[in-house]
Image (cartoon, rainbow, N blue to C red; front, side, top):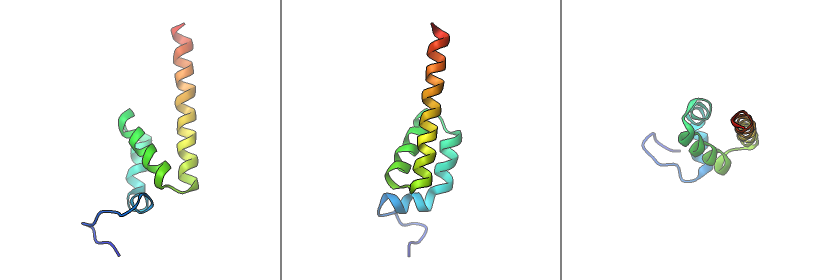
Length: 72
């Protein structure tokens, strides 16, 4: 059992202990924080979180394509 001052020993444990914060960052963080949250969720998340990350990346790709088309 971990106390509140201990450091998670693996990515899965970190995600388990910080899931809400990671989701908040994924939904509302700046680009850098979102990239960090994505990396953490890919490394330590379970299937639903990885699916959410995939959807976020697809949305980024669609937005990037839209912006590129508008700049042409």
